[in-house]
Image (cartoon, rainbow, N blue to C red):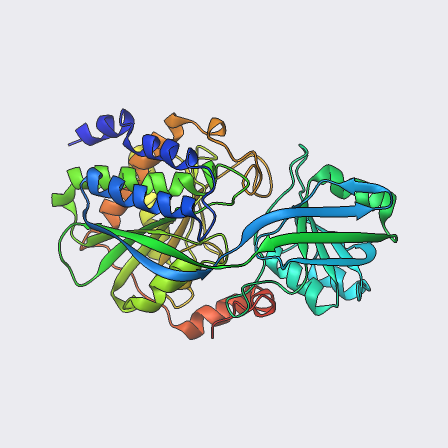
Length: 434
């Protein structure tokens, strides 16, 4: 039966939920807007046909934006605070640390200075270097402040959190700037004294995870996940309204195909992803991970028309993705390497098979995400519907009794992180769990 395909390609349920999320405005972790998004997602999953929809609340470190300034010479440069930056004023010599690679920090004296780094990593470098890794290299090397410059042109200051699980508020004040401001700072003010002033509030707050389920009451389960929170400077359309809206659409399509499901499917839409995967860490610590057959985590999918599946070395996951692609004659891409970011990771790090589902894009870096330009107008409903069709089939296929997934040991995951040169950065950021 293929009627469900035409039904999905004409459905507005998931897209309407995406519009609902972006129209909330501020969905920052622990905010009233995030709570509204969680409640709306709970209600949408229920209306789509999933059962037992509820919100599991948990405490989170709140962070409320105030004003920030970056003063260089006689000028005030446009900037925004990075979430979980401390409220503090500092002054120091501005030093350009390039891309913020470990080697660049080793070669540059930044003690007592303000470090300026790009959000990008050069093409020749063998791995990604996350923003938080760059920040904590700066902290470890004695920087008094951190300036994070967008690598993409357009006058858009870039955001992204700092802090660790043990110390949620960062050590030194941190701001994001546009590429243009970053280039101007390097050209005119490198070696000169600059001043950073970050104002913010850090109250106790509450976040939550939305749960619902479909399918038989089996001992094992599939998790379909995304995160409902977003940075406060933008609509959070791509990152990650699309993931949560896709979960809602999949609840609708899978409810219609529930008789085909041979494994329980549990939907979990996380809160507080953007401040350190807090919601997914909370869930991973509560569940019996041995009972999870696989995680299908959807994050930033609709930014491109070709789905990308990071499979983390689980061959069965790569095989299922390729089976679905071949069945529909629709291209996808797969990557077997580890991606220790987004909400699959608190499960995958312990050896649970898991996808990070995103999309191929034409440009390097995050694109519009983590800037004020992450808005609904960048996205196509056609792409959203196509991907919902492919992901519905993927979940049904993965739920089949004939598809077996094998967990890996924590020791194996740790060894792979070492082999892929990711361990050092995770230790620096406090994310090494072993």
